[in-house]
Image (cartoon, rainbow, N blue to C red):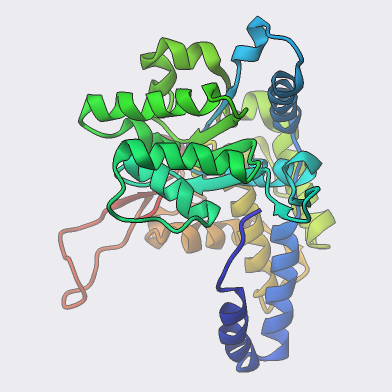
Length: 356
């Protein structure tokens, strides 16, 4: 869905690195890329598609109704929940979102996707949208002119769907007047004569957009991607383990998957579904590089996967500690930096899935 204007340069640069690698390492990289590309469907796909159907229905209805007001879809979920993969996969399945050649022979892209800028001001939000549409942006545009141009270009280019990721930035400005103006901009997008359906995705505090603005709430459908809970999702976690390790990686799974192990796995990832999948895939890679046991995923591979991802001190590994349940979910303690190599003020916390 996202075009990369630097694709050729990236290919040339990475091909040179690839040429320096051994065939075995390249083969492993290709295998991991294959595994990472696999999509694991869940009930969340059905929920998302039901909401997308509602947006489509409100778009093509020939008469107005109360449901026609639902022109905004908000997808909430913390870092590591799997929002991006969920949206990328399901958007790619929808023909209505894909580029096509219109009656004038012009390549038309019905969906625009971009990240909310930070700081997220009304003007910057419109300018970023114009830039992603490919419209040459002038730096001296006023806020009103930027929004006018943005709405006009959406119409001219026959863009019906706008997806803005990292949308939590829209409510994080300390100036509440700016937050309200951005909120008004969202409402104006879906109220203009050219029909637009808006999708906003992000982490907390994006939910405040709905809580603060009654009109946004009345116009929105909301999906909340909840955390995984072992008691409620035990079968799902076991299924994902077997799917990634056995089906995708063609490896065997050793007999270590107890209820306690599943608890550790979920706890180590803070209950985030996307992070759990990534932890399992990292354990697969640890198995691939294991010179003694490259064909069977064992408990030790999750131990090394967690250490690789979190950078924790060996004795602080959540897959080793007996008191693992007392550790904060997803928390790893980093070993102190040695003198002369940076800060020496002790350990620091890092949640799995967070950027340091």
